[in-house]
Every structure is written in structure tokens, then in C-alpha cells.
Length: 155
Image 1 (tube, rainbow, N blue to C red):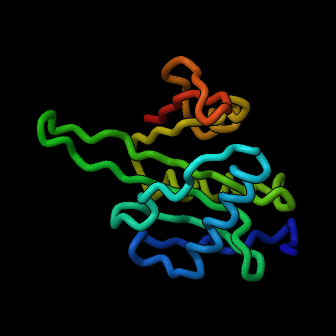
Image 2: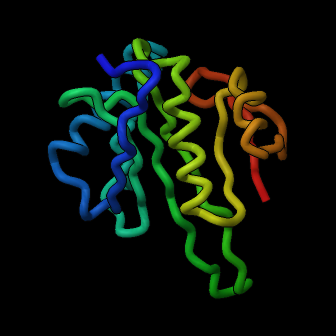
């Protein structure tokens, strides 16, 4: 197990560059957290993980991913010449590694990489946690796969 006082390094890869082994570890963690632990049956493999504009951040303990974040970059809309905020999602930490600030480190790195506006769909109970990174609620709550969510953005 990772020592709580020493954080593991952050690994980073674009969709086409992530190794099969690393992607498998990230998908296994997301499956364990979202599908098994939260009992939310949904299709996590959504076709976005391997896009050239998708960036993965993750930490490992041995061979296992223990925390992860996915960044979906937005392109400029040719009609409005504006860029939609970059989306952060699939924020997950293995149950045995929660409370060590790993997800917070990944969020900080993600926000540094993005360097501008970003948005996310937060599980409602995490509203205050995301608020600590400058995110504010921008709409009404809704159910996504049976779990209360809220839309949040950061300027």
C-alpha cells in the first residue's frame, strides 16, 4: 500500500498514447467505483477514452490504478467561434485510498493543464468538494443513472 504521507506520481497520457495496461487499470478502477461500489449500471466505455483530445491522469499502487481523472477537451465551435469549457469527469479514487488527497492532486493537475474554463457533472454530495476548486453550480440538479448530479462550471 502507498504511504499516506507520500503521494504516488501522477501518470498522464492522451487517449491514443495510453498503454493497454494503463487503460485497463483505469477502467478497472472506474468500474469498481462507479458500477460495483455505487451499484450504478451504465456503459462506462463510451468511445471517448481513446480520442486524441482526451487526457487521462491517474495514480497507481503497484499494478493497480488508485485514483483517476479524465479530461475531455472541447474544440472551437465554427459557427460561434467560441470554445466550450473543457469537461472533467470520471473522477474516482479506490476506497482504500480515499482521504489522502489523491483526487485533489489530480484535480489540481487537471485544472493546471486546462488553464481556462471547465465544467463537470458532479455527484450532488460532492458539490462542496468541487466548490473548493472554484466550481459553482450552474443549473438544476438532475438524476443520472439514478444518482443525483448537478452541473458545475469554473471560469
